[in-house]
Length: 147
View 1 (tube, rainbow, N blue to C red):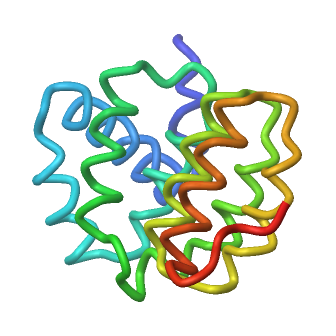
View 2: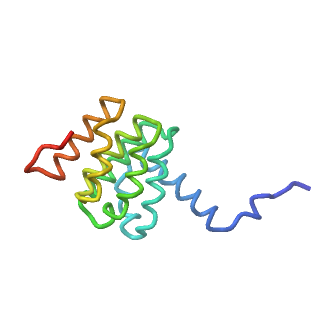
View 3: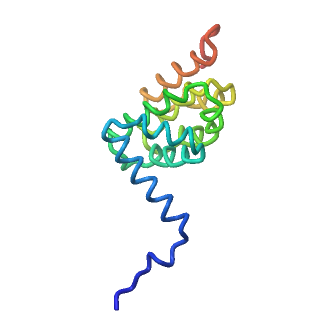
């Protein structure tokens, strides 16, 4: 008799994994609008997108889709609610993740993103420093970012 260990997982864990697989497929195949619509209906599912963002194995095609979704939520209360998570991701060991997180912190339009972005001005990677400076400029358009 085969062991069906998957049956012992809580249903919410299976559903979360299912949503991740679905979002990954949609984002990778240019169907970011479907992900945006789902997040609008179920705001908690933004966490799935943030998990994909924070995974170094996430494919470039999916990362492009994540960018589309984040642009759709620019300045929204929902993206502002993700500032702490994006701030953590801005310190991730992976340069691409740090850079993307800085960009999305700027899109949040939230002043709480500023300390994270200011810290990234001293990042070892020039790409991260540049993105952080640009993001800070969008948060404080009247003054240049401090160094």
